[in-house]
Amino acid sequence: MCLAVPMKLIERDGERGTVEVGGARSTIVLSLVPDAQIGDWLVVHAGYALEILDEQEAELTLNLLRQMGEGGA
Amino acid sequence: MKVFADFRNAELVRRVAVEIARLDLRRKVRLMEVCGGHTAAIYRFALPDLLPANIKLLSGPGCPVCVTANDFVDRAVALAAIPDVTIATFGDLIRVPGSSRSLADARARGADVRVFYSSADALDWARAQAERTVVFLGIGFETTACTIAATLAEAVRADVRNFRVLSSLKTMPEALRALFSAPHVRVDGLILPGHVSAVTGSAAFDFVPREFGIPCAVSGFEPSDLMEAILLLCRQIKDGRAQVENPYRRVVRADGNPRAQAVMAEMFAPCDMPWRGFGVIPLSGLGIRSEFSAWDASRIAVEVEPTREYPGCRCGDVLRGALQPTECPLFGKSCTPEDPRGACMVSAEGACAAVYHFSPVDRER
Image (cartoon, rainbow over all chains, first blue to last red; front, top):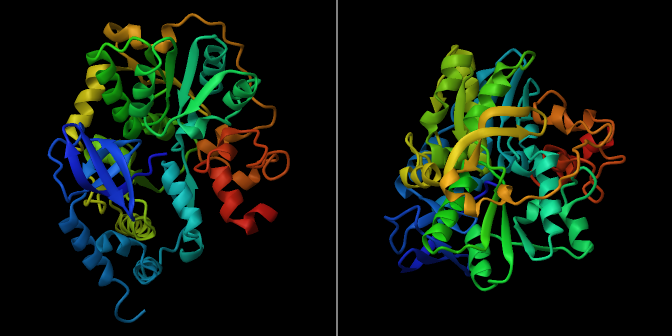
């Protein structure tokens, strides 16, 4: 139930926002992430944005994973 | 979006698996997750098959529907029988058997039970239905509790009097303290719930390594997230360390979401809460503050049937990690997702349902 999907904020109207992922749009509440800006990727759960995804941290994590499993077994 | 899709890349998952195997831990290691989303992802992506045989994954009390005690369902069913009451609920709860019936049964008998994706949608609906009392069933952990707190705050602010919340909301740190304080619980590492941690902050779990010596790692919900968390736990075990590590930094900060914490503290106060499999855990629940009692559905007087459990159901043992789903005598026989006896077989995130759906080998055993 705590699954939350990354969705992109494409419109903002006060505390309500429109998010989109894969062409599907929905309206969510932004009161828990007051700093969210158009273009941000948000973690959305039960109609509320819980967090703003940090794309830089995502890249850092992926780079770390990409370096794993190299060299002799 | 590409950057987030990469967390499902099979090659990355394989690379982490190689690192885990390379650690060559020569002992049995039991790693617990406490999040229904993790349970479902672990089986959906067949992660146990990628791990050395000595690393066992077990599910703890992380599926909100599963840990909801029968008496909550019974109270909701009783409220549903009041003529002007509409029960508004997340879909997961509808088929959970209470002592004698589920909300689906109540609906079949004519009760108005409606599924909402969000408490905010339920509040909007209540505003348009002034003649009905809308009771929203609050289940879940911090991830969901903060959204319901925000909706409740909005109902109070806008003075929407026909919207009430019946709270069975729970807090994960207190449950873990109860779990690890119990005798005979052997957990070598804990995979921390990613979206609970997004709200509470990873620091809320610092007590686990400090007080219980159990290594912790926060995980997201993609296969590479879970594998990385497992790798970090295995490294801690190998090094003899115990600390909270957070590889899910793209979402989780040490101090969490202060706005979400503030609205929860504003609307809710800690209260004793019954958990399936644990009984009452002191101060592990979130009750609606007394100043907002007009919005508290537990104040509606209603007769609730005495609680009883389905004979032979071992959900409680499964939720404590004491029993694998396939070890329950009802599993796959009289208890299946189509005709469930226990909550762990109802929810797609329940350990029993996850094993049943995604692990045919186990099911046949």
